[in-house]
Length: 180
Image: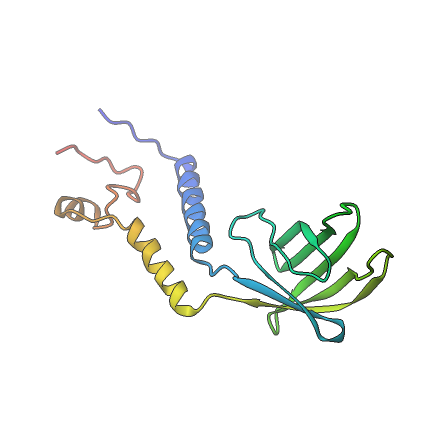
């Protein structure tokens, strides 16, 4: 004998599962940025690669040896803080920028310390452009993502469940299914 639960509780689980699946799908198929190029005072540029892992720190090439200690690139915000490699408490670069949705460029402020043995801070506007992977790479990535997740449907599944491969996944909760 099978018991079927009716009510709103199973519907909430289905809604949550679908929402999580859609979120995962969008995250997995989003084209990750490859690199960011920031332009600031006197035509100077700072280019760095976006880390592949969440929480990673990109290496940078600056006039003085510096190591990134804070990096965030999400929710339309860019933040990078780099410290001097030998004097760990000396800030060399701070970039804080927000995405301008009209032109898709991150605009904000940069503070740099270009002094050798003395503190020499420079503060001004910064404009950062994001380089994305080419379209062919993104399409290939999407195809492989779907290929890994597709489930073949057998004739028995197609006849009993409408062809989506998950027997009774979206069936009405009050409709009993008789075992064959």
